[in-house]
Image (cartoon, rainbow, N blue to C red):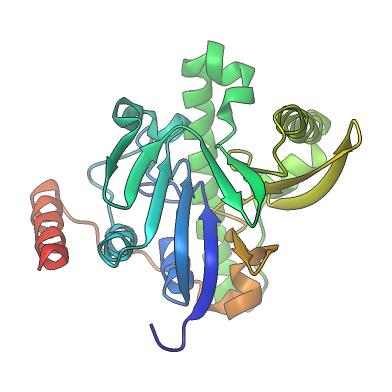
Length: 280
């Protein structure tokens, strides 16, 4: 662990392992640069909705392997399940050693309560029209894949990459309104329950902002995602901050090369190998 940056708590979400848009190489680079005491996986780490058994690159497996190493090393790892990994909810409250699977989490941070949850509970469409949400997820994944191909060409031409979905979200009034409502509802519930911090994911919009509700100060935080923003949250020595991959390592570090894709038998054998390496 020598030379790694010490962090009390790291929070990241919306990695969407198993999809073409996932920037697993960048995430792995970030994870290898820190030495956290607690790791909070705030939902949609593995995208079971969009998961395709024919697409599971080595870099995606390496994320799982790195998390397992942290667990074996005795670090506290909390996996908060939500919409894209909802199949894991059947294991809610499962705990083995320092690893747990939960739907939400409340943690004491230097005498203040921090409430962690993914955020899809606020999404009315998610609750009442799952088929529509899944269709939207497929469209988003296709847009990200197209965007990745175009960015690969832009980088080869020496130009800066661009984000289609971020441009769309920032220009469509209804999307901006939804994000604002999402933040306000989260903050209002946190204030009613006496939480100083409310930490979410889901909307892929990294943010850290202080609100005042009925005289109470509440800090809203969102960890963003590892598809477009490549962001995480860190809490250390009483301070929160948003971490952006390109600010730490530079945008040029992220590669868009196509990785080898293994068949299901090779994938299963790799998983067994990784598991045996962790055990030993």
